[in-house]
Image 1 (spheres, rainbow, N blue to C red):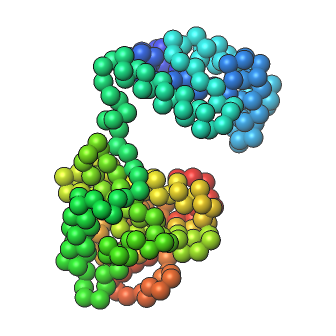
Image 2 (image 1 turned 180 degrees about the vertical axis):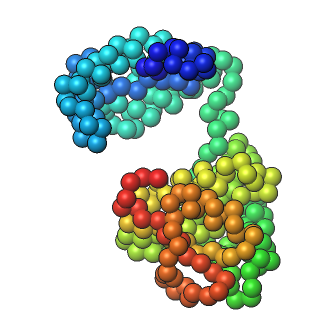
Image 3 (image 1 turned 90 degrees about the horizontal axis):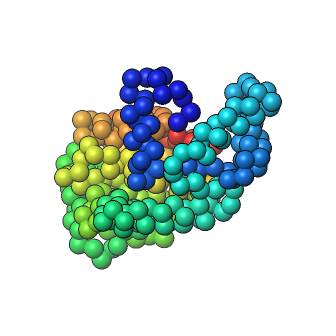
Amino acid sequence: MTYARDVHPEYARVRDDLEHGSSTFVLLPSLDREICVAETVRRQIARPFGRSSPAEEAVIRSRFDIYAALPLLKIETMRPVAAVVDEIVAAVSRRASEAGADILRAMPVIKAADFDDDRIKALLTRHLEGMHTNSPPGHVFALDWSGLQKPEISFYALWDDEELLGFGALKQLGPRAGEIKSMRTADAHLRKGVAAMILDHIIAEARRRGYARLSLETGSGPAFEPALTLYRKYGFTDGGAFGDYQKSPFNQFLHLDLTSHAT
């Protein structure tokens, strides 16, 4: 939003769309100019941008005026995260009501899976059938219904209103390690980003718990390639067996270092 309007042929149009978007907000440390500038400079000089503090301050001061002039809701972020989120959710709900559309209801929601839900049971059955079809005997380690209900397992389902999009699980291996289990997308929603949304949630939860490493076991062959591509895109790398697994010509193990920068 701080570039000249002629910087790119499409920039002016994109900027206008953002300025008038129903879900666009301006997040600032503070609405007070001096506090906002001081806090932003403090954050920026801690990063390897190379500008001196006075130079950074000059840039931030000019940008503050640009953001302050935008005809958008301004939200202060120098307060508890929950308060910021509450204000954003309230604003989105208010705008949705004014527009006569339920925006929040249209957004996929991930939550703890309900073990009494027949839709989840049906997708789990489909998942297990697929694992057995595409794996040699004795090489299926997917969790069944009882396995998913063990205390060390957190099982999540992604929903679009009443439609189940997919699910995934996080297993605690120890105080600093976790394992991804039972990743499955409903057939009708393949290649729509469902697995990425679930993976984002699991990785965020693993970081929140303070895990240093997130691991997974999977198979080999065409049926497993889409998942392997996704995991590697997120920074997972090949590694050795872990837990009770044994290496074989079929299975493979991937690990994500959570002590490095966020993916």
